[in-house]
Amino acid sequence: MRIRPHIEIDSNKGLLIGGLPAVKLAEKYGTPLYVYSEDAIRESMREYTSALTDIYPHHTIVYAGKAYLTMRMAEIVHEEGLWLDVSSGGELFLALKANFPPEHIVFHGNNKSAGEIAMAVSSGVGRIAIDNVTELERVQKEAASQGVVQKVFLRLTPGIDPHTHEYLSTGVIDSKFGIPMHSGQHLDAVRLTLASPNLKLMGIHCHIGSQIFDDSPFLLAADIMVDFAAEVRDKLGYVIPELDLGGGLGVRYKDAGPDDGNGIRKHLRNAAKRVAEACFRKGLPTPRLFFEPGRSIVASSAVTLYTVGTVKALPNGILIAAVDGGMSDNPRPALYGAEYEAVLARPSGGGELLSYRLVGKHCEEGDTLVRSACLPELSPGDVIGILVSGAYQYSMKSNYNHLPNPAVVHVAERQSFVVVERETLEDLVAKERPFSHPLGKAGPEAASGG
Ligand code: LLP
Image (cartoon, rainbow, N blue to C red; front, side, top):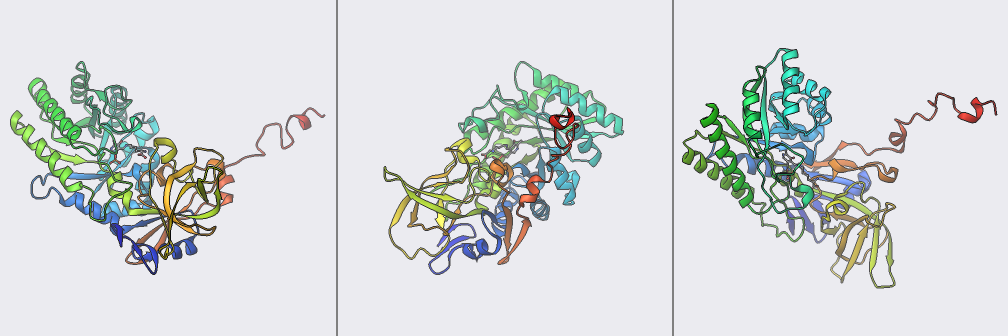
């Protein structure tokens, strides 16, 4: 039975990821383990890249690397013809190391450091998405000192509530991101960009939030952005050639049917049509349209595998199964109350289903991965897979309690391979400098002659 694209449950082999038994992957690479199906990743990328070819060919899909970025992933993004959104010098560095073409990179961030700006300009990134006027001046200065003209987007905040988790709402007027479309600040920012000799204003950008299911806030954003482009033309005589509507399409973590689809095509077509209509109304040429999806490309392509260590029954009847990872490899339940679905990796053989609270091994009561997972009776050693684990898990991992980070494995053409090695205990202490205290190894007592 297919439960997600390229993820199945087989009555003889159990959970299959990209056709390979999860139990075997766990045996071979250990757990916890992030396992991605490359076919699933490529399929959703192709849905994005093909959705508009007939109705709005002048468009670019930029994968938001913050959702999941490894050097192998950067290669896939390039092979599939997408651009890449990076939001820090670290993500940019990784992309360049993976030979990602810099001219296809959009550099984001609400507080880019001087070093990051210098790195972005010198590596020749395709667009810098400028977040605020201070940054605008810094980018102008840096581009001037390097003697180049830098192509930029202006990130604007349209003042839209997308009705998602408050931490994921970035388009509201009191957001920390972007230039508020309020009291003329946005028009002033455009004026300043146009007057900056080393900046070329390519487009305006907005990203209203993440994990959004309803299309209407996106459509409203499209209207607001096009209206503003018309205002810029009318007041400043400049036709903005590009419009970036950000990412944000929601993903079903639980209870998705195998053929529910992810709504990518419909979402993109609705937004593109709305932009075209709004431009027609305003007598504007249609801009080159950019979208920046992250979650909807990678979320359902991965499963995180864990091994059950202990199982207990509480006095109130609740069954607890503790696994060998937890909030360090997936902070999303603790941070956003995110809900997931867990499946058993081995063939279950039918039998009664029980409700388990799946918890991690961290020293924190909030370290619960799934509040109520419906699973066959579990025993220590059983491997569990958490579905839809591909977005914002690997990228938000930590070393809480000094747990080494899991390995990342990709599966393609029924072969598995490591794309990030499992961290070792030695890695965890590699940056420690215990003997560097100026008073010497033994500290103050030895120095005082004590
Ligand atoms: N573009 C910009 C400028 C963004 O800030 C983001 C996400 C995206 C695109 C991609 O959005 P997506 O298509 O993935 O929704 N850590 C949170 C999600 C934070 C999203 C941050 N920005 C989570 O785990 O749910």
